[in-house]
Amino acid sequence: MTQEKLKALIKLLINLGKIRETIVDVLTDTDALCDETWDIICQITDCQLPLEEAFDKMKQFYDPLPDGETTDIPEIVFDPKSMQVEMIQSVDDVSVAACASVADYGTRQMGLQYRTRNGSETDLVLAEVKRGTTAILDLKEPQNTDVDVYVYRDPSATDFQEKFTVKQSDLEGGES
Image (cartoon, rainbow, N blue to C red; front, side, top):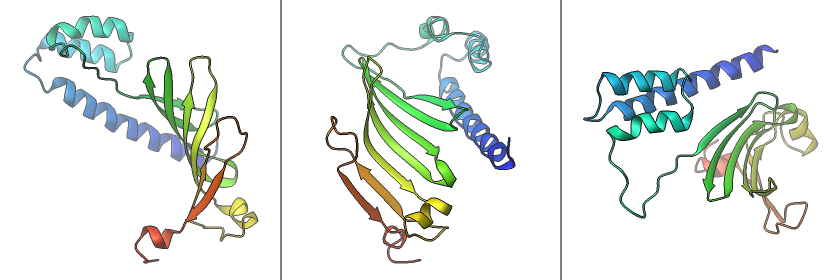
């Protein structure tokens, strides 16, 4: 493992720790908080309870949603092999996924995909900041900060249908 990869994993761990703290704060900001709910929250944060069991134990302390209303928080997934972080929002049997990764040669990417129940994935949009060798091959400076955006309008096509570049100076109101 390189030092850069180690630093990225530590940063991710810190960020997820902050998210965990915020969620625990939300769960404990209730009139229903008691020793029993706190013990359940501790079991959940220590990954000792599966989702359904945790929900069954906690739901008695919270009000049900009014009829017809739903709440669904996106799922966060990390792939240690590709170092990709995904946020997935499911809707019935399909989902939309936002994926962040560092591609070849340090290019930073954010993508949006549509995923079906049978496992197929369709790219919708990809935004990337090319760095290093990849930037040079695209006639950009090695420390490029401009964003290339690729739009996939035709789900049956294998390549993007539109590409444009957003300059950093334009994003910052003309300041460099």
